[in-house]
Length: 252
Image (cartoon, rainbow, N blue to C red; front, side, top):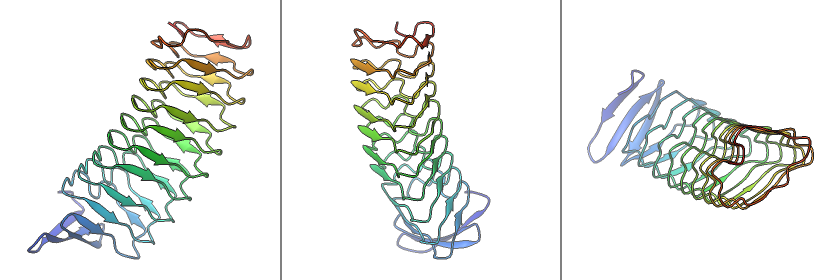
């Protein structure tokens, strides 16, 4: 049990948790956060494997790092409209979570926020999102497609690493770089059309994308990192702009 959390047990699956000074009622694995709560502390429900769902208070503005990490039975979340960020590791290892819809006010997704959630099939990202942290959707092996919003300016390393069911990615028009290993191991990804504004592709960005048969590079591309497309046996030919510096083993 966490140091800042005490539990009052009652019969028939009912309990009351003291979470950062707030009383949180949990009935048969269904938690209800009280109105007036604005911040859920770090690791508030970490490794509470019996947690099935959470009813968030409308007043909640922030969720601490690792708040639901390892909640392997959590299958339903309805995030409040006032939330502005998903912090590091918030939902990592929530292996029963089937989908993610982020509210319109979210501007950033932290490191590993949804990593190791193998049953997430869809992730709906808001238009105002500007940053996706490293390993944010790492090993989300059932995620099938993602539309990156127009305002996105940063995708961290390995953000979609080994999302092995990912078949389609829609890139925003203003994106200028793709970090290292972002789509590494996305073995079902078949086609990539990169935005005209893109100037750099990081090391191993698309390596081991075994189904990748077509890549359209923008004219202003200046660098392709080492092993960026290594292990892509379906990629028979590419046209790389003369402006681009190509790293070692980029297409091996």
